[in-house]
Image (cartoon, rainbow, N blue to C red; front, side, top):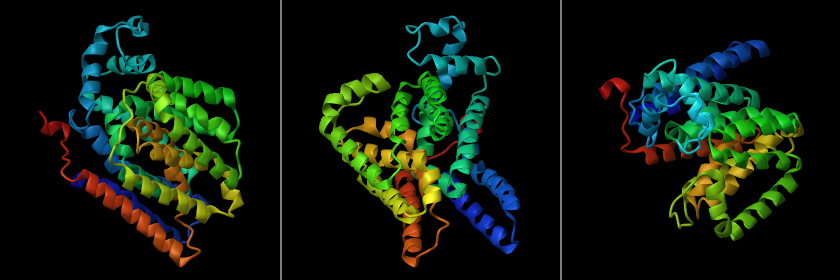
Length: 356
């Protein structure tokens, strides 16, 4: 667990260095941006290395992906990849793995290519949609999204493609948005849920956003049993309605993060106008984590929108307009690392050379 803890703290330390350098040396905006990019690269390097250098059994489903890459995919031609009956994974992922398999059979190189694709997109997204990308990655690690990416590779790649589609929501280019979501669907069926975001982003006012999501949450809760089978078939899941018995603490932290961001950003019209899509993603995360209390399907769906929650909160941390808000901010950040440590107690890590 110690490796994960070090990786989680690195973004905070990098933020501290950035803040000291920025204010101490009185850097101009261009110099600040260059420094931010360099320090962000350093901040995420530990977690990227953990992703790349891990043993093939680190992550619940990792060994399945490694076996598919090193064995099964090599027995198929490109024509075979279009046959739905041969493999149960989506065609986009088949082609993606087949192309990598032509270059190497080393699973560490395979992890490296995936890391470049996933973390490269996250690096860009965090710089573009928040002024504090260090906190974005801190939340990404401590709130469990990294652990999901470590094991749920197909959906992680689909989520990455959807991140690029966010630009086209903001620019109101529906065709390009749709094409990217369809591409993501070819990696994991669950990407179709991301289509909801485009019409919702037409709502600009906070009041109507909140009303919309209260209605949406109520409708989902009331009708979730009826839609469970539909969601499973559409999204490629196999969960049932259940009393999950957990998720309450995570839901509370999620609601605190979103609520805090709404309060801090209220009245900051310029930032709000520029971040409508991020606000919508944050609110969608809360809705699906409410549903998580009755079905694990909702948890898997929520990962598509959770990046928006991280970005929205990250927008707030540099505002120190009230002492109570600053205190609350640090309490939230402390709760995130406390939950992270609690959830990862006893979880080990092996580098690939330790498993030989």
